[in-house]
Amino acid sequence: MKNILFLFILSLVFTGCAEKNEQDDTAIPNDSAWWKQGVVYQIYPRSFKDTDGDGVGDLKGIIEKLDYIKSLGVTMVWINPIYSSPNADNGYDISDYRSIMEEFGTMEDFDVLLDGLHQRDIKFVMDVVVNHSSNQHEWFKESRSSRDNPYRDYYHWWPAEKGKPPYRYSLFDAAGDAWKYDSITNAYYLHYFSKEQPDLKWENPKVRQEVYELMKFWAEKGVDGFRLDAFQFAAKDTTYPEFPDDLEENFIQYYAMQPGLHDFLKEMNQEVFSKYEVMSVAEGAGRNFKEAHELVDADRNELNMAYAFEGVDIAKPEGYSLIHFKEVFSRWDKEFAEKGWLAVFLANHDQARLVSRFGNDDPRYRAAAAKMLNTFILTMRGTPYCYYGDELGMTNIGFDSISQYRDIAALNGYEKTKASGGDLDAYLTNLKFASRDNGRTPMQWNNTPHAGFTTGDPWLPVNNNYKTVNVVVQEHDANSVLNYFKKAVKLRKDNPLLVYGAYTLLLPEHEKIYAYTREWEGKKMLVLLNFSSEMVPLPVPVNEELEEVLLNNYEQVIYEEGVFSLQPYQALVYSLQP
Ligand code: GLC
Image 1 (spheres, helix red, strand yellow):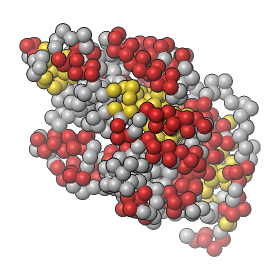
Image 2 (image 1 turned 45 degrees about the vertical axis):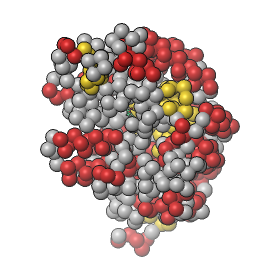
Image 3 (image 1 turned 120 degrees about the vertical axis):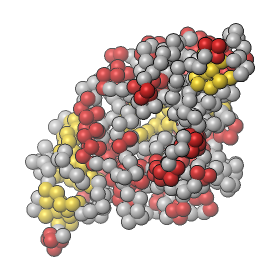
Image 4 (image 1 turned 60 degrees about the vertical axis):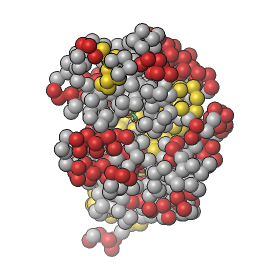
């Protein structure tokens, strides 16, 4: 770079500025709520911390790490399902909604955990999986036992004497077929996910009451929020009409937001949400903006927020276009600028690791890229959802053989590809990049065997990089991804501007830089994110004077005569002169 000789090294001057921002919440909008101002930390309990040596994480493990969670600065914890389950889909197949999975512990452990979170001012969000139950749930056992059983109508059945039911695509089935024949009553039952996950029949008011009662059970215990799993699929046309041939490619169009869904949500709101101080978030935000608004606009009394997939789905093994990425996030922001509220996330338990998908997990860039992506999540409008391990920059494990995978979606997808004569190499290549197991490897606590996750054999192997990528190493390194993450969370919490402020995209056509401002109550911040592994010259894209560096994932800011040289995956957040 020709300007290297004339660098202005600004960063040290500004070290520690983030700490100076004390929260000023005098002018928070009237519709403000704790769940808007919060930062969510998502824990995949199977993989967080094992205390009994069975290789599976447990509630006592989360309890042991409560101070760690608190140290992150997060204000809400969402834990994936912890109910009794035969674990066909790692807890997303529930056999008893009022008890704790044996592998995870006991109800006493749960009470201690909830209390421990509350003592630390952290809210708890419970995962509610009620589009379907486990096929081992008592309701289903009853339902399948005879056609006139009182629970028969808790699920969707098609009598076989009417012939085969109209085709339904299943996301997880090894044959792709969502109707499973059951000889006991000579009928087919419906399962949009695996055959171990029969869909509950929401059109039956008794099913709905059962669900509200179980939600109240947890609300009475003191949980602070509910995440509704796959709920946009819950309503179904129970005449089961034929769907067009493009069902498999476009199943969302046919399955999501069917008539009746909003009535169910309004009823749930009335029966449960309105009676407790709880937050509600749905997986899926409908098929278009209108539907997304209908789910979350406050005056409709349905849900508080939803999360959409368009942004997170952009990453592909062959890469992705930053211009497209910016366009998608900006479009969603604009649509919800006045009304409604959304979640902001780039990873969860259904995705591979954030830094491997959206950044760069080459050891040269991993740390900078992880910090940069965390900066993005924590400086956008909407509630940030941060997935366990991403605060360290954990990476994809990248299995080579199907025998290494544990995820039912990966395993059954392989069977399906094989049975249909598909390209198994291509399937495995895609899985190596995108598999959910990539995002489920054990938390990397320290450099002892299995990264300190377990003293036994972990249910899924620990990533080989645990000796360098782990909590202990990063706690002792002032420049680690972890310490940067904590600063970024603090900046977010100290500045309502980052929660409520208007977002404006700058340089929409820039292929490497994502630049935007956030503006609120006469204050303004500039966010500059280099999404590339190159040094990128960038003239200051705003007219205002730069005031302070609030976040920088490098030690230096390289800047000369109005032009930055952004280092690979550099993230900078500035306050601007009013
Ligand atoms: C949701 C969950 C996913 C699960 C599926 C079936 O998409 O996030 O993990 O496999 O629903 O419950």
